[in-house]
Length: 526
Image 1 (cartoon, rainbow, N blue to C red):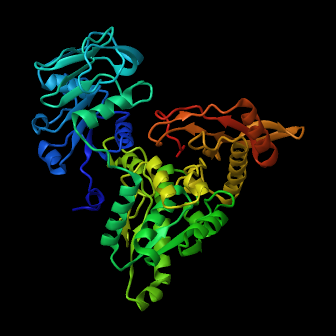
Image 2: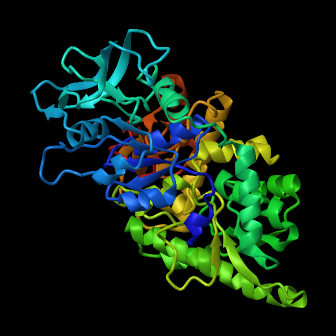
Image 3: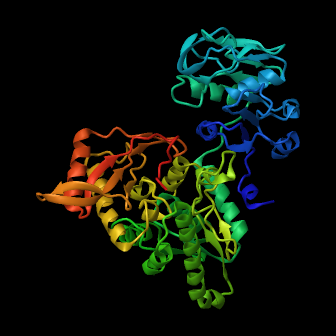
């Protein structure tokens, strides 16, 4: 049994991903309903599904057409396992096609908010109004339901927008119930989970903590553990979980690699240690990291260098602590990391193609000397925050805006130098201070501040010509970082931030706003 499997003891609801934009959101909505979920690839076999012993299966949407030769297919034997199944969008059409219904491209597409009419409630539409707004995104339609299936709903252009066969426990909807734009979407998912599949909601932070504490103790035994504490919520909660499990066997190492935000090192050493009592060893390696990054501009190379140097620093910290560990015969064998489920998915651990390597996932060296302990690997960010609060971590740490492991190194577009880091630190501090003063910390997910180091533009400052760098503001709103939209900050606030940066940060003469959603853009620029 591999490490990933060891971390899961709940019977999962499997989300079979057909390449959907929203597969991760489906999994997250299931967890919001108090049920554990896991994403798997559409090429999973019936035997592999049976081995996971799922409580239910959800088939995601996807961009393909079911009747195309190269379209993703479902192992038909999965339909014979007797496990309750819900198909969404492409997954709905896959069910219809596999079970003898008819799916056509009528030339009539539905995108965005659509009025849907309920003909029969069945199990999944129970308690819902006859007319409601749902979120559609499809070009094909189910024209005829499979034999034995009851048609539950339709729209002006889609005659079969939902169906079910309660005897076989197979259900489907054409729209996306996982998105907030579908007014009663969560109710549909809960009807499927609770009514149709008969699942009891037992996935909660208390259970997760108890489970992880037990697993950490079983994995670590009496050996010692190192945790890389960055000050961010992920590593903070991971460390707190491990500390709860093994106490003083844990030593947290804070790597001051010079890529941190202003006053960040002081905050970690003061606030976190005071709240937890965890032993913290600080290692100052700014020159080492800057030397390794000298001349490097490619973002993937930066990430891998930072990941490599991060691990090497831990190995050096381990060597320094060998004498102490040897005294009680408890060697340091384990490294804690705050890897989250979105990190794994974006690095290629899910279905979607790898978007970028995360230093907690794809940036690790092949000759890693530690066994990893990743207690958050199956969790989304909101679940991590809930667990952190339950573990008693300070609000300032639990609700802190996400900050990437590679730090400001991937917010400088171009070579990373100390001068550029100092410039970006000042701009970032201004943005954070003004957002806090405006009371907007809790309303946005994150606001990366990016320095376009290899770009200069002409400006006028002090009655003279300037040739400075642009600073990019990237305020985004999100629920789990899998998708995001740009935050509509007040114009007066943006003006104040721009004026302060251009007046107080030497070398910057222009501030621009990034208004790209995710997708197509990622939250971080690199």
